[in-house]
Structures are given as structure tokens and as C-alpha cells.
Length: 363
Image 1 (spheres, rainbow, N blue to C red):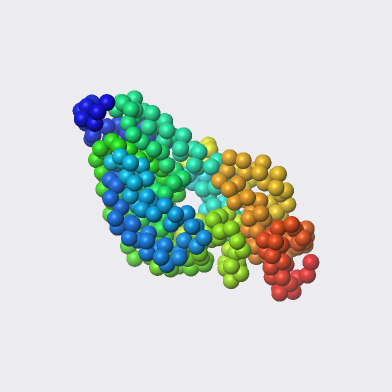
Image 2: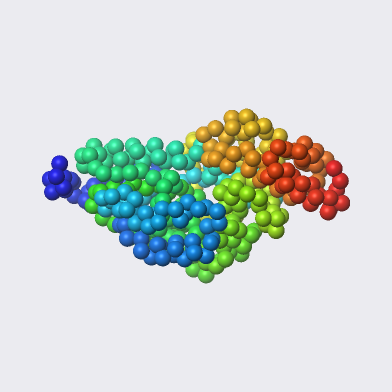
């Protein structure tokens, strides 16, 4: 079908947009919005952030040049972006952040407690695209869920799903910030929703609470100091000066979200896929540290946690055990890994044992 014939066959853009919104809600998305593809302002901010080295060793952030900020370069023919939000806050034994008061337990970021969100959202977005095709006919599109050089937060802002918080996360008046984002790049000419007003005001709760002071100023996060980066993206040793601040956080960090006043409006997700698995909402550190690689792979199957691998899993837990009370059980767990084949694990175990010795606790 030629472009002129295709355009004339499409339903009215506003009507199509509302149909897409309705289908999105039926598929479990809490919000659906539409964005244009002009990300010039976001491109400037990204270039400044990269130039300052704030991406650490996430070299993939700079790898694709302008494809990240120019959707039509990534997917030729893109005219609009369908942006979706899916809430993920799971039912847990402790409210977000409260587990930090129990240093013998491990804290896993709320988003990673259940099934890998990439798979959940991607499957729903593909179903949404199929419904659009059923009404509009075959159309050019590509689905993304944090899986390619896509500026998902600036696009979500342009689509009216929320505003950028001072902690660098998107915030919605209706749902706080405990949600995932996904996108469909499309050649359909859909009406842009436009941004909503920001409502952070003078609040600096997220900056004040950040354990490692990674939020160096409003709207600016230095990933090199961020606990989520250090425990997930970073492949090498965790900087010694930052280890005590990690506390019992072994995969990610939710502090800036847990303290955000807007999250009092967040609702617990009804998605079964996001419910905690294998007791990871309140696990004992010594139990997790005893997992063999085979156990780690089995218990993180279908989970976002698996991507860090067993070695970094042990690295993170070793730090948490170094920050935990020096009970005989904790010391025995560390001793059992003192001669681990991985130099990375051994160094963090030795640090943890030395930390307990400085407190006068001997294994």
C-alpha cells in the first residue's frame, strides 16, 4: 500500500489514540500516552552527563551516538512513540525501605523481586501492537522495554505519563514512581499528549536520603556513586569508601523512591508476575551467600537478578555481611568463602572479615 493510500485508510488519529489507550488498559497498563520524536533538549543533557563520565563503565550509554536521542535514526520512518506505564510495587513482608532496619537480611530492589519485567512488558506491548494492526492494518513499528538505545523517560514526559523527579525517575501524581516504562516506535501519525506540570517543588527528600550522595544536585545522578549501578551494572570491585553505605542492599536500591512523598499514592500491583519469588523480599544473607552457582541460576530463572551472575551476587552479599552484625553465623559464612576461586569475591570477603576485626570481632 502506498503512503497516501495507507494514510487515507487509517481511522482518525484522535480516535485511534483513544482506542490504543483503552486497549492498553485492558492489557494491564496503568497509563498510555503519545509522544513526538523531538528530543533535542534531552540530547544536550545526555551529552553533558556522558562528558562528565557519570555513566561509569556503562559504555553502552555512549555506544550508539545520536540513535538514542533521535528515534527516526534508530527506527527509520518513526513518527510517534506510544509510551506505557505498568505499576510493579509487589506485596511484601516489609514496606519498601523498612528491611534496611534488619541488617541480617538482604535487600533486593522491589522491581526485581518477581519475574523479569522485560519479558512481561514486551509480551503485552506485542499484543497491543497486534490490536493496532487489526484496526489500522499493517504498520511500521518496533517494541522496546529498556532493551535498546531509547530515552524512555524523556519520551514518557513528552507523552504526559509524569514528570522527571529530582532523583531522575519519572513521577506520576496518580501512581508515584513504582512503575516500569515501555515503548512502541511507530510510523503512525499519533497526536502528542505533551508534558504535565512538575510537582516536586522545594522537596529535597531524595537528595537528603541518598546513602552515597549519588544525586549530586536536583535531576543529576552520578551513576558511579549510585548503589543500583554499583550492585548491578558495575562489574569490578565496589569502591571501598562506598561499601559501608551499601548496608544490606544486595541488588539495587529504592531509597530515593521510598522517601518520595508522591509514593503515598502508589498502589500494590495486582500482577502475579511481580510477586516476590523464593522469599527474596526478606532473605537471610547467610542463606543467600551459601547458594552454589547452580542454585543461583535455578532460583533466579526468569528474574532480572540473573543478569549479574553468581560472582557479582557473592560480591554484593559479602559487602552486606561485612556491614551486618558480626554473629558467629555471619563470620562462619564469610570464612567459608575466604578461598573462593574468584579474586573479586575473595577481596570483598577479606574486606568484610577485616571490617569485623576492626570492631574487635574475631572469626
